[in-house]
Length: 97
Image 1 (cartoon, rainbow, N blue to C red):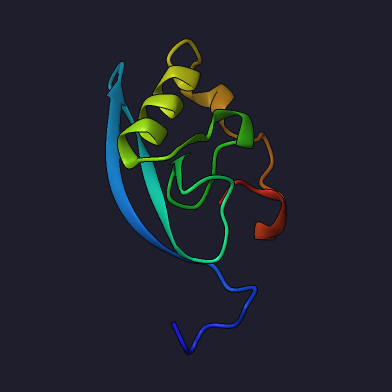
Image 2 (image 1 turned 180 degrees about the vertical axis):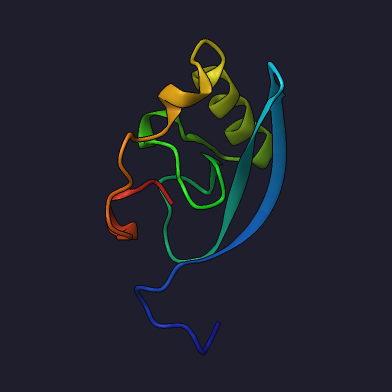
């Protein structure tokens, strides 16, 4: 990845949709291609422009492991509790992805 800077992160994303009680959220599983994430794979629930709190993001050594970890964390939680009440300014430095 010659055109990326040392601190850049490049991921390949696989998107899943979770439909529960007539509501839908996305779960994007990021695979690190360049740079470091919290793990080789990180599953991030989102509503396109709102990213779930880090407590509800899943990690793993494989896509399926990260997705399963995420699903386990969000299973007992209503969708509205997964996301921050107020979205902070966009700064990726403090999030799992």
